[in-house]
Length: 253
Image (cartoon, rainbow, N blue to C red; front, side, top):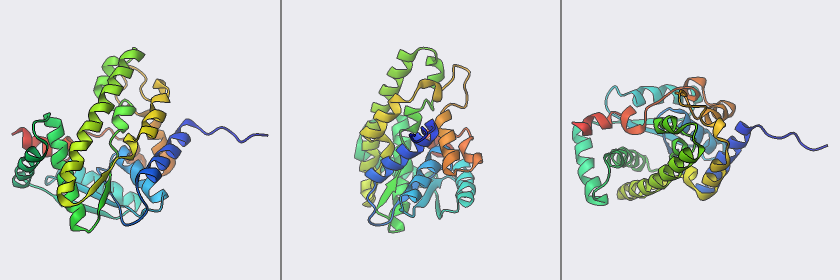
């Protein structure tokens, strides 16, 4: 008699753990860029599952949602958490360094680079040479509102997904260059070729149910709950890094 088939969410959790294991060396300490949302919480637990003893790092402006939410979720998961509060001056200074390093780029890229510039700075100050990110989940599991507009047309959703993954890979090259200013390496296990290949095979109905689906990423949320992510995080609709950290509001001015 064969073994029972794994659930879709159990398979996703196993794939996330495998991606982390193959992408992040076990030597030395590692940190996770952490907002408290389902994606970074899932990756944090995958790092712990792999024996990495991760430290969770959060950056943001005073009173920003990420700063408050990340501290709360990290406490629920009982993982060490460090936060760095940044002001308009620090953001403006980092933006100049980012522009000098990566040249002309879309505003969203610049905002992400500024965020990760400070994450890398925090990691460096703690003597941690490597930061793991959850980038790729939103692109591969229909996390963006644009997927709702394409829902119902599998071809359109597929094209949107491939375009977003390609763009995210290019952006993370810029992020890695910026992190390198502080001697910190960025690891993106969920943008690895193997994980992308797996994610593209996941049925669309597991990711988004239609144009009215505001939650999306359903299989990710179930996998996160299975892995032990608190429900407050697993089923929260959270804004992207540049918005939740308050960086977009400062750079928009």
